[in-house]
Image: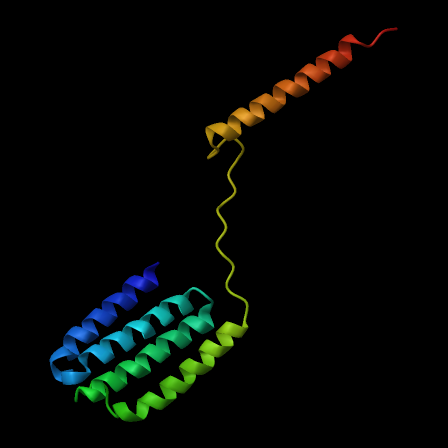
Length: 143
């Protein structure tokens, strides 16, 4: 799951970057942000709308964490929080109401390719049974 690796790396980087500046809020911010990252990872598996909503929600709360630590990462950071949060919530809710994305189907392979030994043996036995029935049918025919 590539989303998990990306969100995990971003979470670790952000915490390392803000850790000294958070003071007594270190543990609460770390735990809350971990929950948000887990939510975003799960949302990324639902559909595109939910994935985008999860990402925007994490982004808005990352801006809040930066504000708490006294770090400005984007201009007018405080003004960006609420629009990102609202868009994230809207996309998360909309994504949850839509059906999940269809799982990718494995490509269809030609007969005999990519089958297990058990499947080949089953086909071989089925073929022998048909031949016996056909042979019996030919031999029992009398004029």
